[in-house]
Structures are given as C-alpha cells and as structure tokens.
Length: 134
View 1: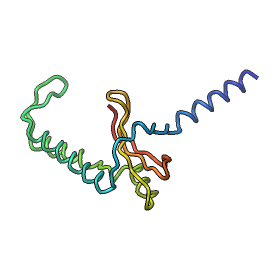
View 2 (view 1 turned 120 degrees about the vertical axis):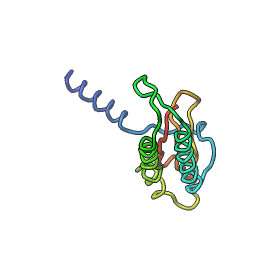
View 3 (view 1 turned 135 degrees about the horizontal axis):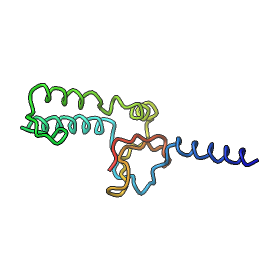
C-alpha cells in the first residue's frame, strides 16, 4: 500500500512538473502582433551582434582576450542561428492563432521569473512561449 501511495505521489509530481504553469493575468503586460514580436527579435539579435562587434576584448576563463574576426563571426552565427521563428513554442502560437485572438507579452515581477508571450482566446490562455528568465 505504501508503495502504491508513493508511486501515485511521484506520478502526480511528475505530471505537475511537466505541465506548463499558466501565466497569471496580472503578468500579461502588453498586446503585440506576430510581426512586432518577430521584428523586435531580429532587432534585439542585431543589437547583440553590434555590441559584441564593438568590443576590443572579452574575458575567457579569467583571461583578457582580444576579439578577432573569427570570434565575431562565431558570435554572430550563434546569435542568428536561434531566432524566435525557430522556437517550436512560437511556431505553435502562430499555428494556433485565429482571428480575434490576442498575443500578450508577459513578464513576472523583476528578478523573479520568465518573460515571454502568451496566446489568449476569449480571455483564456491557449499557449505560451518562454523566451528568457530574469
């Protein structure tokens, strides 16, 4: 009997861990469109590459290393290789999106949780994509 109880508790815990938590409505911050999200993502990635390209040195394992063309190319490739359009959850939001649906940018209070986007239909969360943690 004890083994069955432990297995049931473990099963419930695993199900709760695997299921994405809903995003509290008070964290839904601003309405956005698909185009706005994808444009902002491209701009942010371009800004990261520009910032890195402006550096003369970086710290690698505590050592000051001069940034060279190869390092700049590798950084740019790594940043541009994973746009939001490649994110399976973002693609799912686009696939599920219907006329009348809304997409909100969400954000937990500062330094306490994730940032992302949530697809909302008739006031109910349909699907979310997490893009960063604070």
